[in-house]
Image 1 (spheres, rainbow, N blue to C red):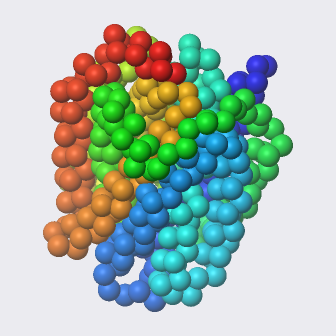
Image 2: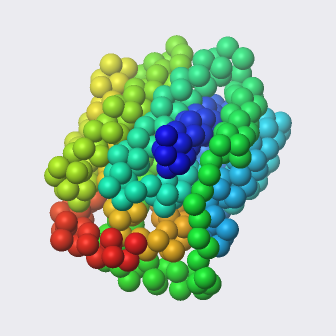
Image 3: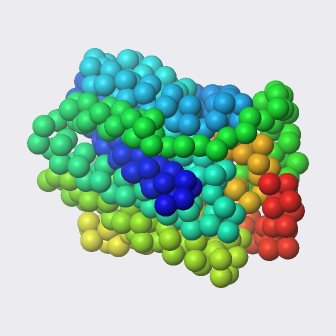
Length: 399
């Protein structure tokens, strides 16, 4: 087994554990707030607490990206895993919404495990294997998104939400131990030291990176506008056991992403990653909009499964294009800026989702998500020349 393959498999397992830990409890945040005594504006407060972490992530990610270019991605993985595990344990003992808000903010400041693992794989994998490697790595997050909500729903139903925070912390520490013991990074420090604004100008000077940032911003926005109220929407459809139903729905979506991850790499190699990206946005719009009108668990399950397939196409294609067009000594900062952009999208989207649900209806958030996906499709089609195969040579030259 070559070193890049060993890294890929270890980080696949690490991302699986981390994604499972993240999704073990967050889908049930509105229910946890009710346990803490919140009785009014649960959807709005849930969106605010979710967005607090993303604000912090947006501010901190460029710093972690710059440090990764100086010291390597592995130290960033260790830093993130250790600290986030501790924060999850502390969340289990939160006594009110204010404490949970502060812990989620600290969580956002110290996050970055999965983006760091993606950047490490992108930097240590031969270019001809990059699409396959990132497509495989994407299945780890999808698998975690299956196990997390499913196990979290069962745990929340039988032993309470508080215990799921403790399990999440243990999973993060296990992932950190795997990275410490088994990951070997080939790293050459970047001699360039510049401000975050200079990093942003450098990234935006590359047309392909500008386009990818915009597209993945749309993707994250569409996904997160639903997050604050999804459990409440499911509870309206399946009131008997909303935790279990929510876990099953998240798991179906993740199962679709597992199947579509490696397939996305093959489709991208054949059609071109720019075309695959556009296809993913088109399918996302197609399957997000009808969820607003779902009136049964079965209807929502089919639509969520199809949406998971669309997300895999966009995520894999976007990450491959990031790796192809980012200079080798700039990849840590490029992915750090991407993480900040995704966090900003999540801030706006999760806050907006809570307000839309309170002002109109829970189902209205799906209309917003579908509209944003349609906007992503228009952008992908309009800017496809920047990501066309002929432009990849430019990205390869700078890498």
